[in-house]
Image (cartoon, rainbow, N blue to C red; front, side):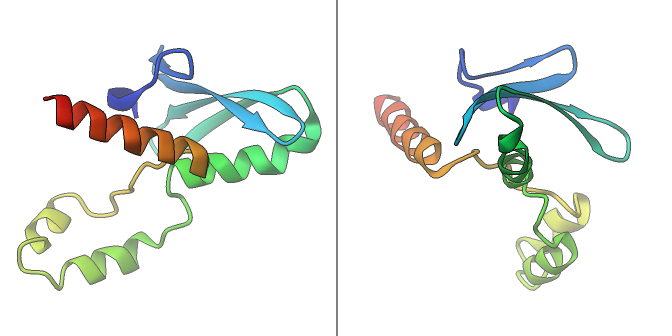
Length: 116
């Protein structure tokens, strides 16, 4: 997440990934800090009605609802991917917090690769 951080929206500082959230009832800030056995999540919301939506977006961002055992099992069926899965089982695919942000990142990513 730190490698693709967009200044003014997200940052990696003091061991935590921090970012802004645009939510149905206002804005929020989330800090996600890796721990040995979990990710600590600290939310600052302008409206408590956004709590469920903010948690859902954090789960989506970190790909927490994927079944890593099932994903690893499927990827291991490919002879080229199997050694990579065995070297790092249970990997997650970081995402964005919403579809609009994903679209903007995709376009910007294409512009950067085209310019290079």
